[in-house]
Amino acid sequence: MNIVRTILLCLLSLTSNTGFILRGIFRTYRNHNINKNININSDSFIETRQPAAVALQTVEEAENKYNLNWYVIGEAKRMKNNVLNRITVWNRDYVFWKNNNNYYAMDDDCSHKGASLSRGKLVNNNVMCPYHGYEFNTNGVLCKVPGLNFTNTPCQNQNTYNIVEKNGWIYMNTVSNVLYSPRNISIFEEDEARNSSLSRIFINMPFKAYGRVLTENSLDVMHIGFVHTFGNKQSPSPTKEVPPYLVGDYPYHYKTEYDYTSGKDSIAKKVFGFKQLKIENEFALPHTTIARVKFGEFFSTIVTFASPINVTHSTLFVKTYRNFWNSKECDTFSKLYNWIGDRVTTEMMIATVLQDKAIIENIKLQHSDGKFNMKFDKLQNVYKTLYKKLVHNLTVTKE
Image (cartoon, rainbow, N blue to C red):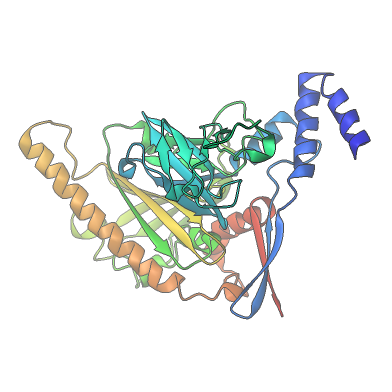
C-alpha cells in the first residue's frame, strides 16, 4: 500500500486535472465506509450510501457527485448567533453554529473520547468539548488541551463540512472538507427565489418515514384528491400531461406538467373562482421538490426538502411562495394584509402536511416500493430510479 500511495502522490504533480482525479481515487479508497447492515423491526434492511467520489472521474462528474450531498438542516430565521446546534443526517451527528453571519460545521463526536461537542460551548469561536475542555477551531484543528503542551497530529482533528445559508434554508454538505474541496458552491435554486416581490412562509415537521418515500409523496399528483381537503375526488386525474423531462439547468433536475380540474374547496375555486389549474411538478436530487400551482394570473409554489435522519425518520422542510394575499406597499394596512396572508398560508400548509403525515407514517418500509405503477406515477419513478442509483439504495431481506 505504501508503494501504491507513493506512486499516486508522484503522479499528482503531472497536471492539475490529473491531480484532481487521482486525489479522488485516493480519497475514495480511504472513505469506503458506505455499506452497512441495520436491523429494524425484525427485517434486515441493507443500506447503501453512494460514494461521494469515485475513481477516474472528470472534474464535472466529481462536482456533480459532491452536490448530491447537500442537505437542508435548518431554517435561517431560527438560527441564533454563537449557539451550538446538533443535527443528524444519515445516522451521523454533526455540530453547527453561526457566528457573525458565517456558518461552521464539524462532526459532533469529539475525536478524543467521543463526547458530544454540541453539549459544550463556544470560546472565541472555538468549540470546547464538555468532557475535558479540549478546544477545536473552525477548521476542526485541536488547538488547546488544558494543562498540557502538545503537538497536533491529524488524527486529533475534527472533520469539517461546508455549510451555507441559501434562500431561507441552511444547507450542509455531508462530504468532509478533508475528502473533497469543490470549485464552487452549487445548490439547486427554485425560480421563485429570484423574485423578491413574492410572499414566502416556512414550516418544518418530523416524520417517521424514509426520506425517499416522503419526497415521492410530494411528487404524487394522484393522492391530492383523496388525502387533501382541497383535492378533487370527482375528477382526481389530470386532464393533460407533459411527461417528465430533464430541464438541463442543474444536474438531475426533472419536471412534468399537468392540466387539472380544481377541487370545490380549493383556494383557486372557492376564493378566486377558477375551474382549471396548471400544475408543474419538479425534483432535483437528492430531496428537493417543487409543486407550482397556477390559476389565472395567480400562483402558489410549494418547495420541499425531506432531510433523512436515518432510514426510518426524516424532517420535512417546506417553503411556500405566493403572489396573492400580497401587497408591495409599506403602509400599516399593507403590512397587516401580508401578515394575515402569511398566517392563513402557514395554517393551510400545516394542515396539508399533517394530512400527508397520517398516510406516509403508516406505510411499511418494506412495502414502500409497491408492486405496480399507473399512468401518472412517471415522475416518482424517475426520481426513485435515480435516487437508488446515485444517492441511497435500500433493499429488504428477511432475517
